[in-house]
Amino acid sequence: MNIGQASEASGLSAKAIRYYESIGLVVADRWGNGYRRYDDEHIHKLRFLQRARGLGFSVDDCRSLLSLYEDRNRASAEVKQLAQSRLSDIDRKINELRGMRAALSDLIVSCHGDSRPDCPILDDLAGGVMVPH
Amino acid sequence: MNIGQASEASGLSAKAIRYYESIGLVVADRWGNGYRRYDDEHIHKLRFLQRARGLGFSVDDCRSLLSLYEDRNRASAEVKQLAQSRLSDIDRKINELRGMRAALSDLIVSCHGDSRPDCPILDDLAGGVMVPH
DNA sequence: GATAGACCTTCCCCTCACTGGAAGGTCAAG
DNA sequence: CTTGACCTTCCAGTGAGGGGAAGGTCTATC
Image (cartoon, rainbow over all chains, first blue to last red; front, side, top):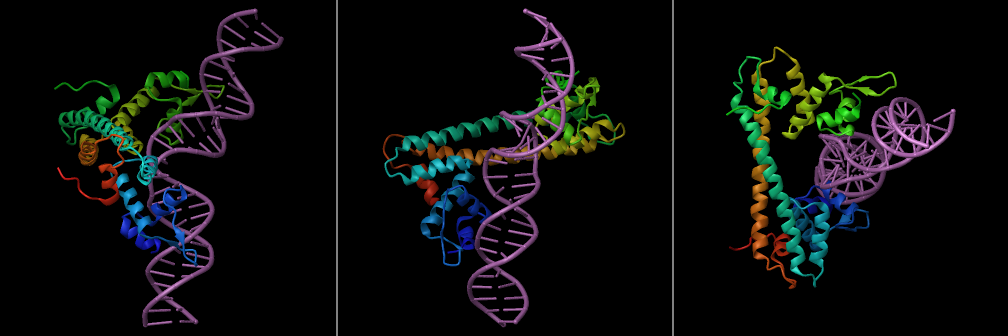
């Protein structure tokens, strides 16, 4: 299997796969012509990476997860802890975005949005004045 | 006012202020000794930037907002549209994070998290199998 | 007047997780 | 033999600054 098929099979771009190899995450074998050769084990790990990245784990998290995955004797507690810390990150981000959303939404509601030049959004940004409800 | 006071007054780091100057957002005057000099107008714009960035506007958005702010004849509709598109971005991100959160949370619940090596989180990442409720 | 320390300057490299592109090698089909 | 798809490595860039070096400047103290 060349990198093109590996890309298709894993859902990662060829660029990403080469990048993961360059940082030592999933290192392919080589054919005689220098092309990368992937077997099922590689694809498995690449899919693992693709899914973990999709869940928001950093590449560094993925390195830990992969090594935990390859260690037959690891405790699941370690993995759970990593996942829980990711969950906290996600919750924090969601809350932050909700705060932004509320502020921005208030501003948008209060802006008539026509051709008149006075705009509560800019006024708020300029002065930091709270928009009255 | 030197950059240190400008930093304190605006809530931006000196590095950020220099960066904004380097990309032409807020360009300071200079004293005779080469130090940057800030007046109230500069501080005003820097605070504007700080608030807009805090609401998640990109630096490029900020460039637009600043020029809209400086244009006495602009229509508020333009600003409102920019803000609304930001709001959509935020909603999209929140939904994406909620999806991640749900998936991750399911996995965490199903993982006993003790010293046993079998771990549904890793199993899911490895196989892409849905965790049964 | 010397010196210490706080502040300022520019400059360059680092981040993160890749993406884009250039220059060139390899392979299968026609 | 050529075309086009595929592959290789390497270099540069992204966003939004952060870290730190090397050196200039200001103020206070001795």
